[in-house]
Length: 375
Image (cartoon, rainbow, N blue to C red; front, side, top):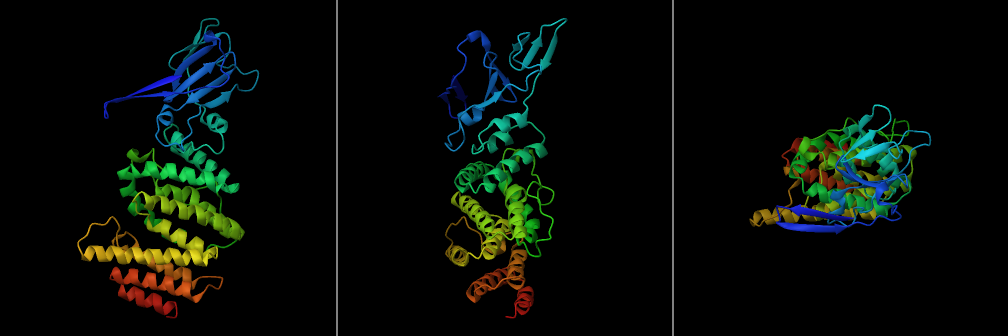
């Protein structure tokens, strides 16, 4: 199949070739249509429909699947679109010629299409572009992520995160909205007070998902990543007392944070809190120490560049919404720990938290927290 894209913005024409294996060579049995912005290749002889997302075909990101999604015939006995008495009328109509005749306009069965896609295929952008209800799309996104997390498939998860953050970086409205909306998730991200009796369900979101305006619907925001994927699995790992799962979710969260920074995006305070908490609870002392040192070094460089009037994309902690609450949560992690940690790590956390509070002008809060931590 030859596909041509006319790009008026760039004044160019792009051409892609897409190959479908084992398609019937009987031209009369093959029809082409468009349903929900997908190209549909319908083969009545093979009783198979191939769905092609043209947006993915022309994507420059090689991590996005370019294969068609193959959906086979439904259960035998059902009246299907492959029936001899049903004729296809492009782009998305079917005519039943029996008796007086019936005309149908059909839509996508999203559950069937998602089920037919390979488990490791990154179809998250495909899902976000669909016209289905947002709750339905969210549930499919969560299911896809959970399936890979359950099998510890970090390699494919990293590819997915790369695709998601790349799309996120191109949506300025989502980035601005995210910046303040995640402050309310700080207490959840600290995982303080969570125990084995807590009611945790990885198929449910943590709290009601906060949704930005319609300009962000095709983007998975940091808020949604936390509420739908990272927090539910982090809480489940704490409840199960599984250090292995804690380390896995910590690795995924760290990678997500690194991908955001690699694209010069600022991770929200709730994500940074979750990374610190997971490394703390998983006993990853060396990695946590390195992470905290890197944060302190970055802050020092940013402050120094500001003093010299040099340009920088980074911000001081005091400029972030929820910075004071973030620092107080760091004190809570230290003072509410059930396990013993090296004093050097505790000192690093307390030092960072105190510095942030002083930057924010919250000296009295810093003194209170230091006294609570026996400092």
